Image 1: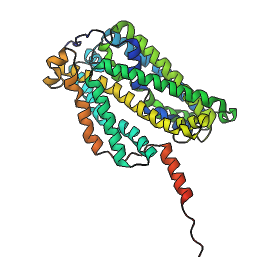
Image 2: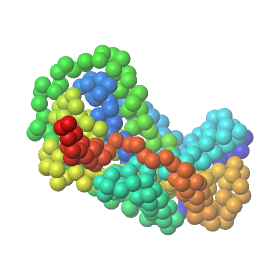
Image 3: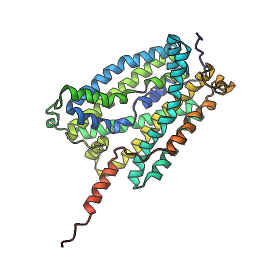
Image 4: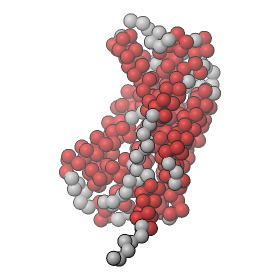
Length: 365
């Protein structure tokens, strides 16, 4: 069995705060916009139990990745752990599966934000694809110039998103009604299980951040701290949004509860803010995944699981530019062939209601 190779350490690596921002971007995805409503529809107020259960399950998951990352820091991430446990073949298959699917999933995430922008502007598929392509290009550029730039940008995005989500919950909570919490469990235990199934993807992302563990300035100390901070922030934001969705919006939270909560507290003028939030959530998520993918690709090249150019002298010196192009380049064919997005968007629903109101009545005969 080949011993895992750690990338050459670079001076002045990312700090615990930047690492927290990168991890938060990977875990806190665009699902926070619509998943609270979906969970509430399946389990009612008892959906809070589903959120809580998944947060409890996330504790050992985050602790495991933090412990492994602190013990084996490097770009290989999960492939390093698989190589140590099961050998080269399993590690190669797992690593290539992680690495190559990021380019396929990126257009889906970018298309989510593109659909929000297109609907807010009253545009169609062309605008959706243009915005999605711009997001992919921005995230690619950030990672082209290195982890320190992408980490600084990610920190700014994380601060803005956390502030917006927290303010949204705080200004909506005064409108909460205890009647919206009764009956607490209208669909029984099966409803809670259905909500868990819908929410499980809201807690993914720890695995890809294992690939940036080699970039920490003090990995043994900072990786567990970043994981703990991320888990605490995610718990507060998720539970806050879930409770506000149930207590304020009741049985009919709509397809985009965050937007409805913000409008409840501020008014209709606040709706465009959710379009900005969708853009920031998408950029933050893709930035984290592209950062992890670039380092994973370089590690796979060093282990001869990818072609030799992935382990060029620049990669061995710490640069990931030779492999940072693979994920975005593989995204373009998927983006070009993507169907028109059908994600729930408050702007689209609001426009349809306006069209229905403007339809002329049939002329009397």
